[in-house]
Length: 224
DNA sequence: AGGAAGATCCGCT
DNA sequence: GCGGATCTTCCTG
Image 1: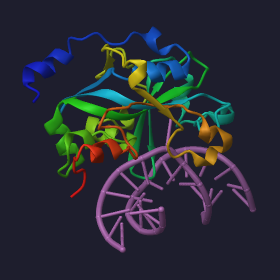
Image 2: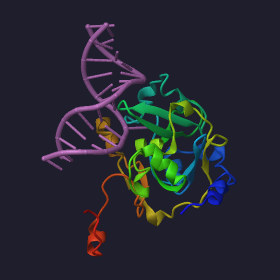
Image 3: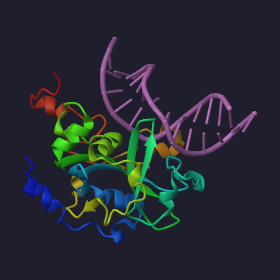
């Protein structure tokens, strides 16, 4: 599917500039759909098209790590300049990767939740460790980081120059963008209902429950 | 010093 | 749908 020549081509594409990230966080989140996340690691290159993200909007957002202006060693990167990678470890086993937005001292970020794999699929399978479909490889924030080889050693990395970068690629038209409340933030009170999750409607790589009615209607079997 | 909860995932029912 | 795995971080006493 993906040949070595295609993979090398990713390294030639321009990175998103710092100004891309220095905007309102929900706008950055929405605009990241369709862009390409790349990691050139010692083990090889992996890349995928971003199809699901969530916006976390600073001290007044009760779901954000920076809620109430609480600044700790873990979330320190959120206070830094836009376009940096914020990686944290959660549930004792999963890494989550975020893109810092706005400007210094405004601790906001976009969580990367799912990719459609484009390159390095064998390496992704190796990192995931068991057989699965391509669209499942980077579905969900913990799985995305595992498949892409992203961990805390990359916390604070500059996404415009890094071994980890986000590349220019066509945006997703509004008609194909879905919005919903964020996943796993029930503790955030009323903020749990804010529609700050954005995803590509027709992507099989998006996490969570997806409607099957259309598939059933078409007579397609989705489960054995 | 200790405990509780977490921006999750997977396998089982 | 439910709960266990597993450990970091933060808050309390």
